[in-house]
Image 1 (cartoon, rainbow, N blue to C red):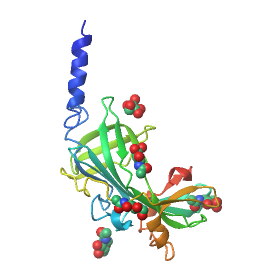
Image 2 (image 1 turned 60 degrees about the vertical axis):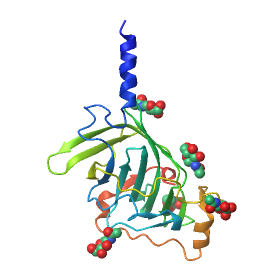
Image 3 (image 1 turned 180 degrees about the vertical axis):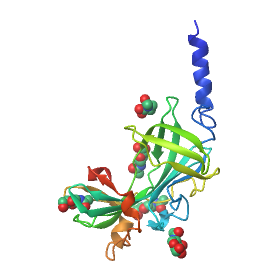
Image 4 (image 1 turned 120 degrees about the vertical axis):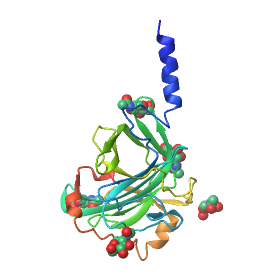
Amino acid sequence: MFALPLAALLLAATASAQQDYTAAHNVTPITGTWSSGSKHVVTGAGFANPAQESFTYPNTTGVSYSFSDDGWYEVARYRFASNASEPNCIIGTVVWVHGHYDLVSNGSIVLTPVGDGYQQVQAPCAATSNFIQNYNFTELFQSWQIFMDPTDGPKLHLFQFDGSPVAPLFQLSPSPNMLPKQVLRNVTANVVTVTSDGLVTTQTQGSRKKRSNGAPELQRPLGAIAGLVVVAMVSTLL
Ligand SMILES: *[C@@H]1O[C@H](CO)[C@@H](O)[C@H](O)[C@H]1NC(C)=O
Ligand SMILES: *[C@@H]1O[C@H](CO)[C@@H](O)[C@H](O)[C@H]1NC(C)=O
Ligand SMILES: *[C@@H]1O[C@H](CO)[C@@H](O)[C@H](O)[C@H]1NC(C)=O
Ligand SMILES: *[C@@H]1O[C@H](CO)[C@@H](O)[C@H](O)[C@H]1NC(C)=O
Ligand SMILES: *[C@@H]1O[C@H](CO)[C@@H](O)[C@H](O)[C@H]1NC(C)=O
């Protein structure tokens, strides 16, 4: 009997998803720039220069997400993690990626990259210790919610595919601070390398050329120990 009106309601909800998912999810729209912790990691030109495959390393570790109202997202992430089998081998990763996001009607968010993302990996105990490679992984967040924090304002909680939470993200600005919403790096000239520990890395010609003097060394920021996560499966990072 009310199957039809319900379907129409769901359709209407999906259509307006970009602006307002549900009141329970949103004290404010998801559009804007968000950053974790001390808010030093911020998407946009201050973090990554895709044409140069370079980064400006923030002073603290963290993650930043931006969402535009026309469906683009951008991620900036800087972190150090310990190698589970060798706790002294601290693996540093710096990631920049952007693409299109979908607010799915079941409450999930899907982030689909456009293919020009890249990451720097510094793994002192691995055969290839410091390199830059393509990074093009689709991310699924099972659910999300925006709360109003009495002191910090809007606070975005993202829950990963397995339900585990990302560090709370604070809104830096309601309009997104992002690099241009287009493909920003030529990734057609790739070489595939298999390192001695069996990890397959896809490196770009550009980063290969830079290998002679290596990627710039990552300096673990003071206080990063507190933010260390133990990586059970190093392969998820690479
Ligand atoms: C890091 O801190 C130094 C000293 O306060 C400052 O000069 C520099 O601009 C900061 N770097 C970034 C990327 O914010
Ligand atoms: C990046 O991933 C997306 C989503 O899986 C895919 O459509 C696209 O072809 C990939 N791009 C490259 C350059 O691998
Ligand atoms: C982690 O430690 C193991 C054991 O020393 C080593 O073989 C492996 O290459 C390390 N992985 C990375 C990514 O550093
Ligand atoms: C929502 O839909 C997406 C895309 O179809 C799917 O990958 C995800 O697992 C779904 N989320 C939940 C919580 O069922
Ligand atoms: C990308 O690089 C390839 C190989 O060097 C080159 O043939 C191609 O023209 C480049 N494409 C763009 C859009 O610059």
